Length: 488
Image 1 (cartoon, rainbow, N blue to C red):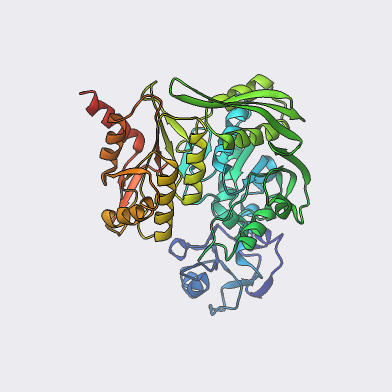
Image 2: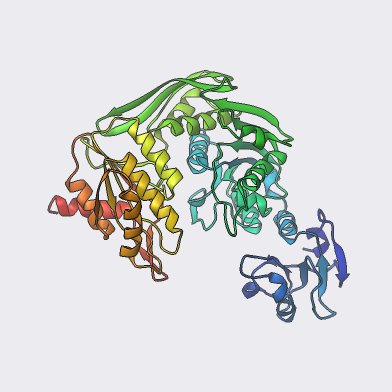
Protein backbone atom coordinates (compact mmCIF):
# COMPACT_ATOMS: atom_id res chain seq x y z
CA UNK A 1 0.00 0.00 0.00
CA UNK A 2 1.00 3.63 -0.31
CA UNK A 3 2.74 5.37 2.58
CA UNK A 4 0.15 8.16 2.42
CA UNK A 5 -2.59 5.63 3.18
CA UNK A 6 -0.75 4.43 6.28
CA UNK A 7 -0.48 8.04 7.47
CA UNK A 8 -4.11 9.04 6.85
CA UNK A 9 -4.97 9.50 10.56
CA UNK A 10 -1.63 10.89 11.71
CA UNK A 11 -0.32 14.45 12.00
CA UNK A 12 3.16 14.47 10.50
CA UNK A 13 5.81 16.50 8.75
CA UNK A 14 7.41 15.24 5.55
CA UNK A 15 11.09 16.02 6.06
CA UNK A 16 12.19 14.54 2.74
CA UNK A 17 11.07 12.03 0.15
CA UNK A 18 7.62 11.11 -1.17
CA UNK A 19 4.49 9.86 0.59
CA UNK A 20 3.46 8.07 -2.62
CA UNK A 21 6.13 5.48 -1.74
CA UNK A 22 4.96 1.86 -1.92
CA UNK A 23 5.20 0.07 1.42
CA UNK A 24 5.26 -3.71 2.07
CA UNK A 25 5.32 -3.88 5.89
CA UNK A 26 5.86 -2.00 9.17
CA UNK A 27 8.98 -2.80 11.22
CA UNK A 28 10.34 -1.61 14.58
CA UNK A 29 13.19 -4.14 14.99
CA UNK A 30 16.26 -3.18 12.96
CA UNK A 31 17.11 -6.88 12.58
CA UNK A 32 13.89 -7.43 10.61
CA UNK A 33 14.28 -4.61 8.10
CA UNK A 34 13.50 -5.55 4.50
CA UNK A 35 13.29 -3.53 1.27
CA UNK A 36 10.24 -1.24 0.98
CA UNK A 37 9.25 -1.54 4.65
CA UNK A 38 8.49 1.39 6.96
CA UNK A 39 10.95 1.52 9.84
CA UNK A 40 9.45 3.17 12.93
CA UNK A 41 12.02 4.52 15.39
CA UNK A 42 10.85 3.46 18.88
CA UNK A 43 12.73 4.36 22.05
CA UNK A 44 13.03 1.56 24.62
CA UNK A 45 14.54 0.99 28.06
CA UNK A 46 17.88 -0.13 26.64
CA UNK A 47 17.82 1.00 23.01
CA UNK A 48 16.56 3.75 20.72
CA UNK A 49 15.40 3.00 17.20
CA UNK A 50 16.59 6.44 16.07
CA UNK A 51 20.16 5.14 16.41
CA UNK A 52 19.41 2.56 13.68
CA UNK A 53 17.78 4.90 11.16
CA UNK A 54 20.84 5.10 8.91
CA UNK A 55 21.19 1.30 9.00
CA UNK A 56 17.49 0.95 8.10
CA UNK A 57 18.00 3.21 5.09
CA UNK A 58 21.07 1.25 3.99
CA UNK A 59 19.08 -1.99 4.15
CA UNK A 60 16.40 -0.57 1.86
CA UNK A 61 13.64 0.70 4.16
CA UNK A 62 11.15 2.61 1.99
CA UNK A 63 10.43 5.17 4.71
CA UNK A 64 11.49 6.05 8.24
CA UNK A 65 9.19 7.43 10.94
CA UNK A 66 10.97 9.41 13.66
CA UNK A 67 10.35 11.87 16.50
CA UNK A 68 13.52 13.84 15.84
CA UNK A 69 15.61 14.43 12.75
CA UNK A 70 18.02 11.63 11.90
CA UNK A 71 20.85 11.41 9.41
CA UNK A 72 19.71 9.35 6.42
CA UNK A 73 20.52 9.56 2.68
CA UNK A 74 18.58 12.07 0.55
CA UNK A 75 16.69 9.33 -1.30
CA UNK A 76 15.09 7.97 1.87
CA UNK A 77 11.59 9.18 2.77
CA UNK A 78 11.64 10.63 6.27
CA UNK A 79 8.50 11.41 8.27
CA UNK A 80 8.62 13.21 11.63
CA UNK A 81 5.80 12.78 14.17
CA UNK A 82 5.27 13.81 17.77
CA UNK A 83 4.94 10.25 19.11
CA UNK A 84 6.27 7.27 17.15
CA UNK A 85 4.55 4.73 19.43
CA UNK A 86 1.15 6.24 18.72
CA UNK A 87 2.01 6.58 15.05
CA UNK A 88 2.94 2.88 14.97
CA UNK A 89 -0.46 1.95 16.43
CA UNK A 90 -2.42 4.11 13.99
CA UNK A 91 -0.36 2.93 11.02
CA UNK A 92 -0.91 -0.68 12.09
CA UNK A 93 -4.68 -0.08 12.15
CA UNK A 94 -4.51 1.23 8.58
CA UNK A 95 -2.14 -1.49 7.37
CA UNK A 96 -4.58 -4.24 8.39
CA UNK A 97 -7.63 -2.25 7.12
CA UNK A 98 -9.03 -1.42 10.57
CA UNK A 99 -9.99 -4.92 11.76
CA UNK A 100 -11.28 -3.65 15.15
CA UNK A 101 -14.20 -2.07 13.28
CA UNK A 102 -15.22 -5.55 12.09
CA UNK A 103 -15.32 -7.00 15.63
CA UNK A 104 -17.15 -6.37 18.89
CA UNK A 105 -14.19 -5.31 21.03
CA UNK A 106 -14.04 -5.85 24.80
CA UNK A 107 -11.08 -4.47 26.79
CA UNK A 108 -10.43 -5.34 30.44
CA UNK A 109 -8.07 -3.41 32.71
CA UNK A 110 -7.29 -3.62 36.43
CA UNK A 111 -4.66 -5.00 38.77
CA UNK A 112 -6.21 -8.43 39.29
CA UNK A 113 -8.88 -10.53 37.64
CA UNK A 114 -8.23 -9.61 34.02
CA UNK A 115 -7.10 -13.05 32.87
CA UNK A 116 -9.85 -15.07 34.54
CA UNK A 117 -12.55 -12.66 33.43
CA UNK A 118 -11.45 -12.78 29.77
CA UNK A 119 -11.76 -16.57 29.77
CA UNK A 120 -15.15 -16.44 31.47
CA UNK A 121 -16.45 -14.05 28.82
CA UNK A 122 -14.98 -16.00 25.92
CA UNK A 123 -16.27 -19.29 27.33
CA UNK A 124 -19.83 -17.96 27.44
CA UNK A 125 -19.76 -16.34 24.00
CA UNK A 126 -18.27 -19.42 22.37
CA UNK A 127 -20.86 -21.64 24.10
CA UNK A 128 -23.55 -19.41 22.62
CA UNK A 129 -22.09 -19.92 19.15
CA UNK A 130 -20.42 -16.48 18.90
CA UNK A 131 -16.85 -17.01 17.69
CA UNK A 132 -14.60 -14.98 19.99
CA UNK A 133 -10.89 -14.29 20.05
CA UNK A 134 -8.86 -13.65 23.22
CA UNK A 135 -5.64 -11.73 23.84
CA UNK A 136 -4.01 -11.83 27.28
CA UNK A 137 -1.27 -12.77 29.69
CA UNK A 138 -1.30 -16.48 28.90
CA UNK A 139 -2.00 -16.62 25.18
CA UNK A 140 -3.69 -15.22 22.11
CA UNK A 141 -6.52 -17.58 21.26
CA UNK A 142 -8.91 -17.86 18.32
CA UNK A 143 -10.44 -20.78 16.39
CA UNK A 144 -7.94 -23.62 16.96
CA UNK A 145 -4.94 -21.26 17.23
CA UNK A 146 -3.07 -20.65 20.51
CA UNK A 147 -0.03 -18.35 20.53
CA UNK A 148 1.91 -18.03 23.86
CA UNK A 149 2.14 -14.43 25.08
CA UNK A 150 5.23 -12.36 25.81
CA UNK A 151 3.24 -9.35 27.02
CA UNK A 152 -0.22 -9.04 28.54
CA UNK A 153 -1.04 -6.51 25.80
CA UNK A 154 1.09 -7.10 22.68
CA UNK A 155 2.76 -4.39 20.63
CA UNK A 156 0.26 -2.56 18.38
CA UNK A 157 1.32 -4.21 15.13
CA UNK A 158 0.64 -7.63 16.69
CA UNK A 159 -2.67 -6.48 18.20
CA UNK A 160 -3.90 -5.42 14.77
CA UNK A 161 -2.50 -8.54 13.09
CA UNK A 162 -4.27 -10.77 15.62
CA UNK A 163 -7.51 -8.81 15.15
CA UNK A 164 -7.20 -9.28 11.39
CA UNK A 165 -6.46 -13.00 11.76
CA UNK A 166 -9.53 -13.31 14.00
CA UNK A 167 -11.73 -11.61 11.41
CA UNK A 168 -10.41 -13.98 8.72
CA UNK A 169 -11.11 -16.93 11.04
CA UNK A 170 -14.76 -15.86 11.36
CA UNK A 171 -14.63 -14.28 14.83
CA UNK A 172 -17.35 -11.78 15.71
CA UNK A 173 -15.87 -10.64 19.05
CA UNK A 174 -12.54 -10.23 20.76
CA UNK A 175 -11.93 -9.90 24.50
CA UNK A 176 -8.51 -8.70 25.61
CA UNK A 177 -6.53 -7.71 28.66
CA UNK A 178 -5.44 -4.09 28.43
CA UNK A 179 -2.47 -3.47 30.72
CA UNK A 180 -1.41 -0.12 32.16
CA UNK A 181 1.84 -0.39 30.19
CA UNK A 182 -0.15 -1.15 27.04
CA UNK A 183 -2.17 2.03 27.58
CA UNK A 184 0.87 4.09 28.53
CA UNK A 185 2.70 2.99 25.38
CA UNK A 186 -0.28 3.48 23.03
CA UNK A 187 -0.47 -0.22 22.11
CA UNK A 188 -4.24 0.01 21.70
CA UNK A 189 -4.35 3.52 20.22
CA UNK A 190 -6.82 3.75 17.36
CA UNK A 191 -9.22 1.21 18.88
CA UNK A 192 -12.62 2.50 20.01
CA UNK A 193 -13.62 -0.39 22.25
CA UNK A 194 -17.29 -1.32 22.35
CA UNK A 195 -16.88 -2.24 26.03
CA UNK A 196 -14.27 -1.35 28.64
CA UNK A 197 -14.13 -3.10 32.02
CA UNK A 198 -12.42 -2.00 35.25
CA UNK A 199 -11.85 -4.85 37.73
CA UNK A 200 -9.90 -3.28 40.65
CA UNK A 201 -6.78 -1.30 41.49
CA UNK A 202 -3.91 -1.86 43.92
CA UNK A 203 -0.30 -0.62 43.85
CA UNK A 204 1.61 -2.72 41.33
CA UNK A 205 4.00 -2.30 38.39
CA UNK A 206 5.61 0.72 40.00
CA UNK A 207 9.34 1.10 39.53
CA UNK A 208 12.07 1.38 36.95
CA UNK A 209 10.83 0.88 33.37
CA UNK A 210 7.21 0.70 34.56
CA UNK A 211 5.24 3.47 36.32
CA UNK A 212 6.94 6.17 38.34
CA UNK A 213 4.22 6.17 41.02
CA UNK A 214 0.70 4.99 41.86
CA UNK A 215 -0.81 8.19 40.45
CA UNK A 216 0.63 7.48 37.00
CA UNK A 217 -0.41 3.82 37.24
CA UNK A 218 -3.99 4.90 38.04
CA UNK A 219 -4.04 7.49 35.26
CA UNK A 220 -2.86 4.97 32.66
CA UNK A 221 -5.59 2.53 33.70
CA UNK A 222 -8.19 5.28 33.33
CA UNK A 223 -7.22 5.92 29.69
CA UNK A 224 -9.23 2.91 28.52
CA UNK A 225 -12.43 4.73 29.46
CA UNK A 226 -11.65 7.59 27.12
CA UNK A 227 -11.63 5.17 24.19
CA UNK A 228 -14.63 2.91 24.80
CA UNK A 229 -18.38 3.28 24.28
CA UNK A 230 -19.67 1.51 27.43
CA UNK A 231 -17.61 1.22 30.63
CA UNK A 232 -18.37 -1.38 33.30
CA UNK A 233 -16.82 -0.50 36.68
CA UNK A 234 -16.26 -2.15 40.06
CA UNK A 235 -18.28 0.13 42.36
CA UNK A 236 -16.64 -1.38 45.47
CA UNK A 237 -13.10 -0.41 44.52
CA UNK A 238 -11.63 2.45 46.54
CA UNK A 239 -10.10 4.00 43.41
CA UNK A 240 -13.09 3.83 41.07
CA UNK A 241 -13.61 7.63 41.12
CA UNK A 242 -10.01 8.15 39.97
CA UNK A 243 -10.54 5.66 37.16
CA UNK A 244 -13.77 7.41 36.14
CA UNK A 245 -12.08 10.82 35.99
CA UNK A 246 -12.29 12.19 32.46
CA UNK A 247 -14.23 9.20 31.11
CA UNK A 248 -16.19 9.62 27.88
CA UNK A 249 -18.19 6.38 28.02
CA UNK A 250 -21.62 5.35 29.25
CA UNK A 251 -21.17 4.01 32.83
CA UNK A 252 -22.46 0.78 34.39
CA UNK A 253 -21.39 -0.63 37.76
CA UNK A 254 -21.13 -3.96 39.55
CA UNK A 255 -20.37 -4.78 43.17
CA UNK A 256 -21.06 -6.63 46.38
CA UNK A 257 -20.79 -4.00 49.12
CA UNK A 258 -22.46 -1.09 47.33
CA UNK A 259 -25.72 -0.92 45.44
CA UNK A 260 -24.83 -1.15 41.75
CA UNK A 261 -26.36 -1.91 38.37
CA UNK A 262 -25.32 -5.53 38.97
CA UNK A 263 -25.18 -6.46 42.68
CA UNK A 264 -24.14 -9.86 44.07
CA UNK A 265 -25.72 -11.03 47.33
CA UNK A 266 -26.47 -14.15 49.38
CA UNK A 267 -22.92 -15.43 48.72
CA UNK A 268 -22.10 -18.99 49.82
CA UNK A 269 -18.68 -20.69 49.85
CA UNK A 270 -18.96 -24.45 49.29
CA UNK A 271 -16.26 -27.10 50.06
CA UNK A 272 -17.21 -30.74 49.47
CA UNK A 273 -15.29 -33.79 48.30
CA UNK A 274 -12.12 -31.77 47.83
CA UNK A 275 -13.91 -29.32 45.48
CA UNK A 276 -14.46 -25.62 46.24
CA UNK A 277 -16.96 -23.23 44.67
CA UNK A 278 -19.01 -20.08 45.20
CA UNK A 279 -22.75 -19.60 44.77
CA UNK A 280 -24.56 -16.26 44.77
CA UNK A 281 -27.51 -14.29 43.44
CA UNK A 282 -27.52 -11.18 41.24
CA UNK A 283 -30.03 -8.33 41.30
CA UNK A 284 -30.37 -5.13 39.30
CA UNK A 285 -30.11 -5.12 35.53
CA UNK A 286 -29.74 -8.91 35.69
CA UNK A 287 -31.63 -11.17 38.07
CA UNK A 288 -30.27 -14.71 38.33
CA UNK A 289 -28.23 -17.17 40.41
CA UNK A 290 -24.72 -18.37 39.60
CA UNK A 291 -22.42 -21.14 40.76
CA UNK A 292 -18.72 -21.06 39.83
CA UNK A 293 -16.36 -23.96 40.49
CA UNK A 294 -13.49 -21.65 41.44
CA UNK A 295 -13.20 -20.54 45.09
CA UNK A 296 -13.10 -17.11 46.64
CA UNK A 297 -14.77 -13.74 46.86
CA UNK A 298 -12.68 -12.49 43.94
CA UNK A 299 -14.30 -15.25 41.88
CA UNK A 300 -17.63 -13.60 42.69
CA UNK A 301 -16.23 -10.30 41.36
CA UNK A 302 -14.75 -11.91 38.23
CA UNK A 303 -17.90 -13.84 37.33
CA UNK A 304 -20.15 -10.88 38.21
CA UNK A 305 -18.06 -8.74 35.86
CA UNK A 306 -18.47 -11.33 33.12
CA UNK A 307 -22.22 -11.60 33.75
CA UNK A 308 -22.60 -7.80 33.55
CA UNK A 309 -20.82 -7.75 30.20
CA UNK A 310 -22.70 -10.79 28.89
CA UNK A 311 -26.03 -9.13 29.69
CA UNK A 312 -25.38 -6.92 26.66
CA UNK A 313 -25.57 -9.98 24.41
CA UNK A 314 -28.70 -11.90 23.55
CA UNK A 315 -27.67 -15.02 25.48
CA UNK A 316 -29.92 -17.53 27.15
CA UNK A 317 -29.59 -17.55 30.94
CA UNK A 318 -28.66 -21.25 31.05
CA UNK A 319 -25.76 -20.59 28.63
CA UNK A 320 -24.32 -17.94 30.96
CA UNK A 321 -24.79 -20.22 33.98
CA UNK A 322 -23.13 -23.22 32.32
CA UNK A 323 -20.25 -21.20 30.88
CA UNK A 324 -19.36 -19.56 34.19
CA UNK A 325 -19.84 -22.71 36.24
CA UNK A 326 -17.48 -24.83 34.15
CA UNK A 327 -14.80 -22.28 33.21
CA UNK A 328 -11.20 -23.26 33.98
CA UNK A 329 -8.22 -20.98 33.57
CA UNK A 330 -4.73 -22.43 33.40
CA UNK A 331 -2.72 -21.39 36.44
CA UNK A 332 -5.46 -19.25 37.99
CA UNK A 333 -6.80 -21.15 41.03
CA UNK A 334 -6.63 -24.17 38.77
CA UNK A 335 -7.89 -27.27 40.56
CA UNK A 336 -6.04 -30.50 39.80
CA UNK A 337 -8.06 -33.64 40.49
CA UNK A 338 -5.93 -36.03 42.54
CA UNK A 339 -8.12 -36.96 45.51
CA UNK A 340 -11.59 -36.40 46.96
CA UNK A 341 -10.03 -36.16 50.43
CA UNK A 342 -7.86 -33.08 49.89
CA UNK A 343 -7.57 -30.26 47.36
CA UNK A 344 -4.62 -29.46 45.10
CA UNK A 345 -4.46 -26.16 43.22
CA UNK A 346 -2.03 -24.33 40.94
CA UNK A 347 -1.95 -20.53 40.99
CA UNK A 348 0.21 -17.83 39.43
CA UNK A 349 0.50 -15.78 42.67
CA UNK A 350 4.10 -14.60 42.46
CA UNK A 351 4.19 -11.47 44.60
CA UNK A 352 3.20 -10.59 48.16
CA UNK A 353 -0.08 -8.93 47.25
CA UNK A 354 -1.40 -11.81 45.12
CA UNK A 355 -0.15 -14.49 47.56
CA UNK A 356 -1.86 -12.81 50.51
CA UNK A 357 -5.12 -12.49 48.58
CA UNK A 358 -4.90 -16.15 47.54
CA UNK A 359 -4.25 -17.49 51.04
CA UNK A 360 -6.93 -15.35 52.66
CA UNK A 361 -9.39 -16.60 50.05
CA UNK A 362 -8.55 -20.25 50.72
CA UNK A 363 -8.79 -19.65 54.46
CA UNK A 364 -12.48 -18.80 53.92
CA UNK A 365 -13.07 -22.51 53.24
CA UNK A 366 -11.89 -23.60 56.69
CA UNK A 367 -9.35 -26.19 55.50
CA UNK A 368 -7.86 -28.91 57.69
CA UNK A 369 -4.50 -27.36 56.87
CA UNK A 370 -3.52 -24.75 54.32
CA UNK A 371 -0.21 -25.75 52.70
CA UNK A 372 1.60 -23.24 50.50
CA UNK A 373 4.43 -24.34 48.20
CA UNK A 374 6.36 -21.58 46.43
CA UNK A 375 9.72 -20.18 45.42
CA UNK A 376 10.86 -16.82 44.04
CA UNK A 377 12.51 -15.82 40.81
CA UNK A 378 16.21 -15.06 40.63
CA UNK A 379 17.59 -11.65 39.67
CA UNK A 380 14.51 -9.99 41.10
CA UNK A 381 13.75 -7.96 44.25
CA UNK A 382 14.87 -9.49 47.54
CA UNK A 383 12.08 -7.55 49.24
CA UNK A 384 9.56 -9.68 47.36
CA UNK A 385 11.17 -12.81 48.83
CA UNK A 386 11.05 -11.51 52.39
CA UNK A 387 7.43 -10.37 52.00
CA UNK A 388 6.18 -13.59 50.40
CA UNK A 389 7.93 -15.68 53.06
CA UNK A 390 6.37 -13.66 55.85
CA UNK A 391 2.88 -13.77 54.31
CA UNK A 392 3.00 -17.53 53.74
CA UNK A 393 4.20 -18.12 57.29
CA UNK A 394 1.37 -15.96 58.64
CA UNK A 395 -1.53 -17.32 56.60
CA UNK A 396 -0.53 -20.92 55.77
CA UNK A 397 -0.23 -23.75 58.28
CA UNK A 398 2.78 -25.12 56.44
CA UNK A 399 5.09 -23.37 54.00
CA UNK A 400 7.11 -25.53 51.60
CA UNK A 401 9.93 -23.37 50.23
CA UNK A 402 11.29 -24.57 46.90
CA UNK A 403 12.76 -23.30 43.63
CA UNK A 404 11.03 -21.21 40.97
CA UNK A 405 13.05 -19.63 38.14
CA UNK A 406 16.50 -19.17 39.73
CA UNK A 407 17.83 -17.55 36.54
CA UNK A 408 21.44 -16.58 37.28
CA UNK A 409 21.24 -16.93 41.07
CA UNK A 410 21.85 -19.97 43.23
CA UNK A 411 18.54 -21.56 44.31
CA UNK A 412 19.70 -21.92 47.93
CA UNK A 413 20.51 -18.19 48.13
CA UNK A 414 16.96 -17.37 47.04
CA UNK A 415 15.52 -19.91 49.49
CA UNK A 416 17.52 -18.39 52.35
CA UNK A 417 16.10 -14.95 51.51
CA UNK A 418 12.56 -16.38 51.60
CA UNK A 419 13.30 -18.02 54.97
CA UNK A 420 14.29 -14.61 56.38
CA UNK A 421 10.66 -13.62 55.90
CA UNK A 422 9.20 -16.98 56.93
CA UNK A 423 10.93 -16.82 60.31
CA UNK A 424 9.29 -13.48 61.14
CA UNK A 425 6.05 -15.38 61.81
CA UNK A 426 5.28 -18.63 63.58
CA UNK A 427 4.15 -20.85 60.70
CA UNK A 428 5.75 -24.26 60.23
CA UNK A 429 8.01 -24.66 57.20
CA UNK A 430 10.24 -27.07 55.30
CA UNK A 431 12.74 -26.41 52.51
CA UNK A 432 12.94 -28.75 49.50
CA UNK A 433 14.87 -27.08 46.63
CA UNK A 434 13.78 -29.56 43.94
CA UNK A 435 10.25 -28.54 42.95
CA UNK A 436 9.14 -32.04 41.96
CA UNK A 437 10.32 -33.46 45.28
CA UNK A 438 8.59 -30.59 47.08
CA UNK A 439 5.32 -31.48 45.37
CA UNK A 440 5.86 -35.15 46.23
CA UNK A 441 6.34 -34.22 49.90
CA UNK A 442 3.03 -32.32 49.90
CA UNK A 443 1.05 -35.15 48.31
CA UNK A 444 2.61 -37.89 50.44
CA UNK A 445 1.81 -35.97 53.62
CA UNK A 446 -1.64 -34.67 52.69
CA UNK A 447 -4.43 -35.12 55.22
CA UNK A 448 -8.22 -35.05 54.80
CA UNK A 449 -9.58 -31.57 53.98
CA UNK A 450 -6.11 -30.11 53.39
CA UNK A 451 -5.81 -27.44 50.72
CA UNK A 452 -2.43 -27.54 48.96
CA UNK A 453 -1.61 -24.62 46.69
CA UNK A 454 1.40 -24.60 44.34
CA UNK A 455 2.05 -20.89 43.89
CA UNK A 456 4.19 -18.86 41.52
CA UNK A 457 4.43 -20.84 38.29
CA UNK A 458 0.79 -20.89 37.23
CA UNK A 459 0.53 -21.25 33.45
CA UNK A 460 4.32 -21.34 32.96
CA UNK A 461 5.67 -24.59 31.54
CA UNK A 462 9.40 -23.98 32.02
CA UNK A 463 12.09 -23.34 34.61
CA UNK A 464 14.75 -20.78 33.75
CA UNK A 465 18.28 -21.66 34.92
CA UNK A 466 21.43 -19.80 33.85
CA UNK A 467 19.69 -18.25 30.86
CA UNK A 468 18.17 -21.52 29.59
CA UNK A 469 14.46 -22.40 29.81
CA UNK A 470 14.01 -26.08 30.62
CA UNK A 471 10.60 -27.78 30.23
CA UNK A 472 8.78 -27.93 33.58
CA UNK A 473 5.01 -28.07 33.80
CA UNK A 474 3.59 -28.61 37.29
CA UNK A 475 0.75 -30.68 35.86
CA UNK A 476 3.29 -33.12 34.43
CA UNK A 477 5.25 -33.11 37.70
CA UNK A 478 2.06 -33.96 39.60
CA UNK A 479 1.33 -36.84 37.22
CA UNK A 480 4.87 -38.20 37.63
CA UNK A 481 4.69 -37.87 41.42
CA UNK A 482 1.38 -39.73 41.58
CA UNK A 483 2.83 -42.54 39.46
CA UNK A 484 5.80 -42.80 41.83
CA UNK A 485 3.59 -42.77 44.91
CA UNK A 486 1.26 -45.38 43.46
CA UNK A 487 4.17 -47.53 42.29
CA UNK A 488 3.35 -47.31 38.57
